[in-house]
Length: 379
Image (cartoon, rainbow, N blue to C red; front, side):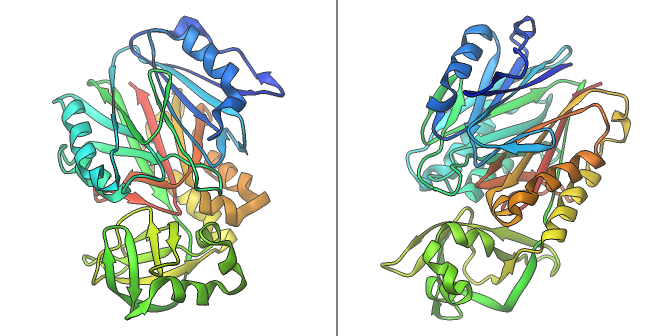
């Protein structure tokens, strides 16, 4: 496997010109860029022109990850040529959020095969129910197949996201790539690091990913009470206060959900994933040091002990909420990840509206406010 990573900006151009000698039917070109793709259009045009045989996919971001740094309004590109493995890309357009599970099922059907090793998903970030999308994929694949990826971002604006397939920008779309063969490996893990805030509350009214009431009280009113002066900045400031759902199988096993939008008319909050009615939840808040430690934990949990002398690609997908909290310390999160990875890793990725990852119990889910890491290599 050959890996080449690059960055482009309108101000600086390319840090190094992508090597089109790597263009092939088994080459994956991953692209992460701003929601306003006109800012990097010359770079996109060059990639599409030079990599005609390759699978060219990507998505918009809330910040592009390149090694130990995060940038805005840049283009981050990973060119990966597989020597012994094959890849397959599929893409489907969402009609509405209720279409999410069906799209997930179609993706699984498109990619499923006896030699499938892993799936990486890049989804629209605003018009999808991420939980249902992931269930549609994971429920129709073997349990030992790692499903990973993330929801496209749009900074703190929550207005427009895009994904890319065959070099074309798509709205309301989900793109996924499957990795096949005996020689390819896909490993993923994630880390968190948030503190709980306030008492545990019962979800008394919710439909899918829309929360209406907690303990019989209007959900939005309750959230505003906790946010205080920050309530005027919703939904963006809601990223500072995600919601933790206590899973029924184990008290300490939680799923974190982040806000995508609010509705003043009915006092509801829309989250990136499902909020089951009858579940028990608690608000969470940031702890700077624990967020950075959580990123380290995610890297440390990756099963990549054999890669100390081997080149590989690592996709980092972290939540925009973490970036909002960490601010100028965001680079520390990426430095912490790099410190735990073998020296020959190539780290690229983006800040997202939701992270898809498989946990240590081989349970795949949509996560929020986590740092998700996916290592891909050939033996």
